[in-house]
Length: 145
Image (tube, rainbow, N blue to C red; front, side, top):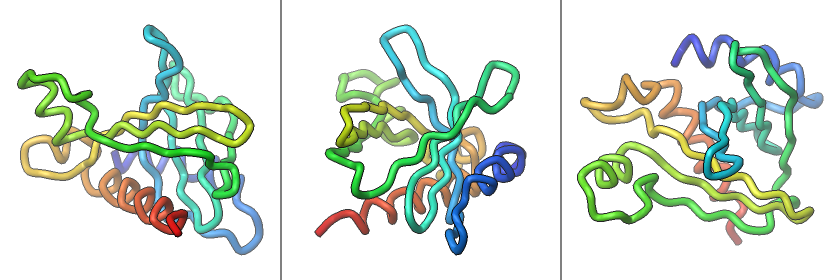
């Protein structure tokens, strides 16, 4: 995961506005339909979220910027979907599902590993992923009244 953060930090930093700070980076799967998804790098800044699309060979595919004012609704939960299976229980514990709706009607379904714990921590991105997910959580806490 450190390699992931090191690889995608420069294109995310290139999108920063003057005085803006990149607080964390995390990897996520952007589910676009039942059978289609893509890898994204989420850059969490003090002002907005930067969602960087990543192609099959690791090439960047453009950045989507989301400000707090553009967030119409956000829901987070375990990635297991509440199904009563061992796999779902593990997914609920090790991964997060985030559904984000914007004021212009866009919907992003993001699934990411937490990056914590002895068994799945390193496999789920380790410390850089854990810090990125924490920064994402703090960003959403600032949205709450």
